Picture 1 (cartoon, helix red, strand yellow):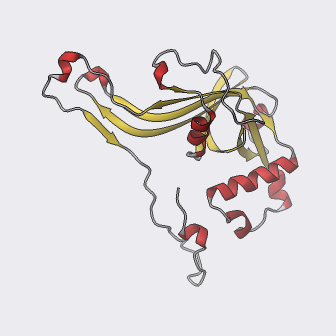
Picture 2: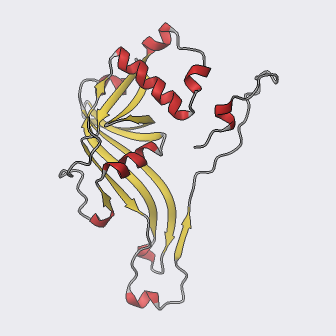
Picture 3: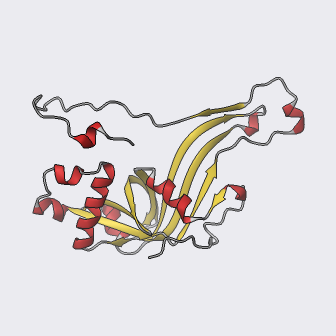
Length: 217
């Protein structure tokens, strides 16, 4: 499938604050790829659910996985409508006026119908997911057993109806507020990576692998 941008739909077109909208696939992919956690919304038996889960992207599809016994995956595999979202919080904006405080963020919203991956696609997708966490992690770890393969399922959704929203500036103030003596600006926020911490039960003689030493989120 192509990774070119698609025209916004009625559901993905931004109406309020439409200048924050991004419809190009490069921006959308970058926001999805920069996160390891998404929220998946769906309805089962008339009740709404939003489930946070890990995700990854391959081409024009986003993937997530879970247990074969998962009610969420069983329902989504039947082709129910799904809403997929990712959000990064990048800063807090402080305004001179109480109603103008804001957030800096990057987000993606996508609509579609999820489908269950067949066994071959599942195995390939989970390897891609694992090596996406740290290159080389799949080959380093113990291979899955047959029972583990059977107990896992992978769902995917095509990114046909999708848009991004990027707020990275300061709010416009009323003219009289610019003349006030109140401070305004923003505080950037970033995810900070710590040093690796070994399992307390790890044999001290076991060396830390390079993919951990060189890990960068």
